[in-house]
Image (cartoon, rainbow, N blue to C red; front, top):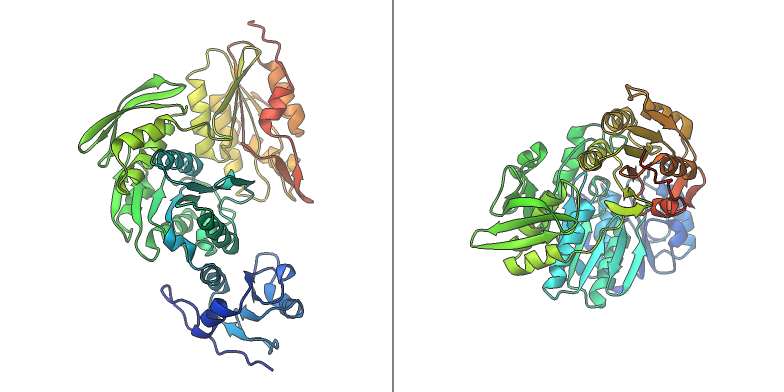
Length: 488
């Protein structure tokens, strides 16, 4: 009968127990924290989750053929090699990286974090690297993509085992550069531990995820962890953001600041509307390049500057960077514009106060008619931001339609009531059925109006009590309805 190893004392720089490292190198056939996924020869890591405890399933994992188990506290002899560690989540990530041969060490890996802008900066970086002739991969909230393989994303940053498997598969298929969106949840839950980042990008920090983080300070500290990874990655940090200015003083690696009002070595000069987005001059320390950025939105300039500064810091030429910004394709679910019967419709992922403000303010300034906003509050998320979003929407839009947006196990009517609590004037309606809400917005729209639908972006599902349930994308709902188009 196997014995349980004594508790293993680890710190932030310690790897796995030597015996476990040898097992991973020669005997283990897989690593998982889900006992249902265990196959003969797997290592099972017991995680105490928010709704369940993996330690309850040790016997099940062993019965399915686990070659060893990792636990977070004292336990009875499970009958296979067992290691007790101070942080099983960290051990899971390190074990997954070791099992797959540390693929991130053989890739150029860029992590992008922040409340808003992660997806846009990731797509901009991907476009720039492609101009450099690289074979790229994307791991983020829209898609997990490598070579000719792509899968719809369900988490901004997946579980550590999935990350390492993705990086290993990408490497095997010839990928040399991967851009990864890194959420605060992923950092707090050790999902990216074991990843060797070459660069880390900070976009901004505003209210979000306070259902998970106890405070904005804890939210910030989680984000800051990306900039203290082993190897001290290049730190590209937004100096227009007050949290970014704090972070720049704390980052362990070389810091490259960027910003529109507090610029670093690269500057955006003479921005003007054009190219369905912006025309501007991108000034480098020793060069100037003209850019035609096909992305609307006031924050697109800052996102472009973040991507350009990162690529420049990694050694790419100014001309390639400008080409990559100019040739970026549409970003799914971000500022997705379409004219329907003379009405401009916009689908965007904005799901927090700052993101909603950015998109509504942009179209408020460019809409000659009325601005109609359709959105809802997500269930099982930070409740405090719901009335804030209601207040902001009512200030910027002529008509607000509050609807259901992935309520989870919460009551959609109660969520919508909390959003409506922030509205100070009577320019709103509550229509819980999202199909009917979009139809009502399109029915009320006239020529010169703009209908902005936010919260889901590219998502093809709603989170309901039964789990993720297929649901038409917002752009598909728009396509079903042609507004009257009257000018009166």
